[in-house]
Length: 76
Image (cartoon, rainbow, N blue to C red; front, side, top):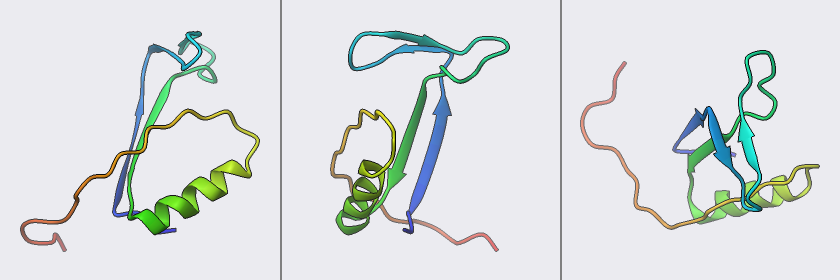
């Protein structure tokens, strides 16, 4: 799968879709809240959702249509 772009942002504290509190601790980051943003077209989005549904994870997501593109010169 190829994405047009993506961002991973870690939070120090947060709560999930069931209202449970999560926080990053000094020695343990396993409960650190994460937000992942990926820019893909509808076909690639469905491929990603299909792949994630086969994993042993509990994942809440928000899917919204956006317009994305490029402006300006490409860095070389």
